Length: 140
Image 1: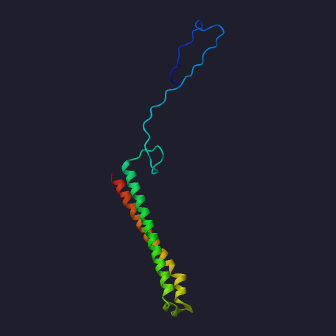
Image 2 (image 1 turned 120 degrees about the vertical axis):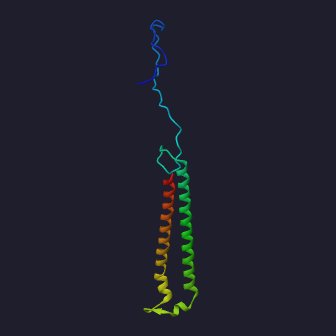
Image 3 (image 1 turned 90 degrees about the vertical axis):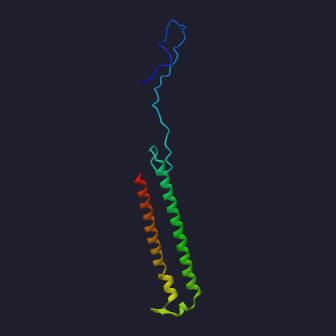
């Protein structure tokens, strides 16, 4: 163990006859420490973080959030529009296919392709955003 005691070896003559020896704390030298880098949730704690990487990662997060909110808003608008058309256009009920009114068939089956289209659009755009992020990050 490295370090030095806080006092020199005890001198028995300097001590009184009935006085116990004083306790001495011996400690090790602490290793030098540099300032800890802030990770902001994009790296493992203690890993070095480049400020440019942090900026690019925050930009990617904002971009993905905007994409998600825009996709949900567009989906809700399309679904509400389809529902209003089915509910407010009475001519749709006059069209009968396979013994069922067209409005029933639209309610049963028309929403699934809309879900798939929005999911594919979101996926394609999210992958493009991540590809752009990687291109920016790797360019440095």
